[in-house]
Image (cartoon, rainbow, N blue to C red; front, side):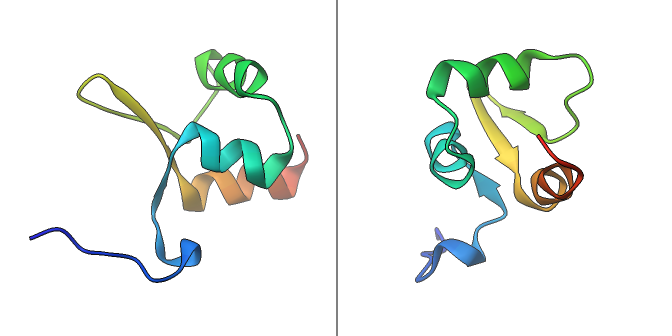
Amino acid sequence: MRKTYSNENDKLLLTIKDACQITGLCYNTMRKVLNEPSCTFKKKIGNRVYIYKPKFEKWLEKGI
């Protein structure tokens, strides 16, 4: 059974579009960030790419 989230803050994995809304970066720029070898918050599940929120938040705290 799939868990439904009542709040965006409950999610552990974000989509690229979610990350774009949080950062204000465009989709293509976010894809470039995710393709960097030093990116630690990218999570690939099957053919889809997600962003692991706790590591992403730490990255944001350091500064984009």
